[in-house]
Image 1 (cartoon, helix red, strand yellow):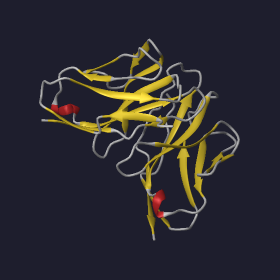
Image 2 (cartoon, rainbow over the protein chains, first blue to last red):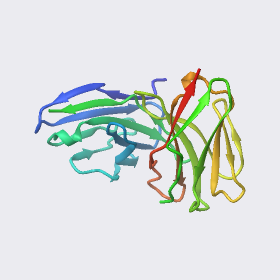
Image 3 (tube, chains in turn green, purple):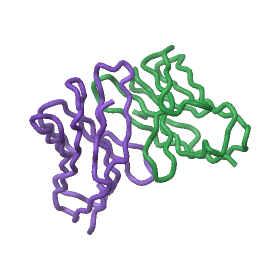
Image 4 (cartoon, rainbow over the protein chains, first blue to last red):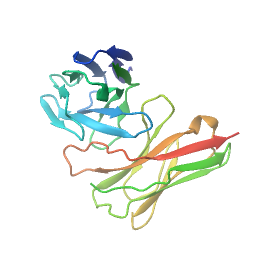
Length: 111
Length: 112
């Protein structure tokens, strides 16, 4: 049982480049979400999904897009990377009444 | 969303019990109290959650005040591996989005 798998684990981008952070879960969870965590700070919600085909914005959605075509996958797209998007990104999945499972994170540096 | 208040940091000795407090005076009737922890360089990890009654699992116990305005996460015997940031989060079961909102948490330091 893999849980929540995030790829890549590390990435360096140049300003203006685009990329997709992958997130996959094998627990048949309906809820999935993306967070970012800046150094020394708490996690902030970027986007979330309550089921396939349904997404919504969180606290800091600007510069990011998401889609949810399957229950298992919830990719996060950076449209035009900026240094302010340097952060650690966590994907999580869960159900209505129980705890969330988090991935191990993607460490992104934008230069 | 209802907010929580936690001390910024706490210290404990190894193999002693630790009581991590959380205040949530504006909690609503449909808010569950969730606790997560984040070990250094890792993603958050679910610890425990409850609504009104005290809860126990293999990791910890959760004691909830009768008026639900506060709660306490109890680690029965702290180990060095328990050094982490502990987050107390309210999760509204009436909210379809139902996502987690993280505050600053409590940084627990465990001394050998």
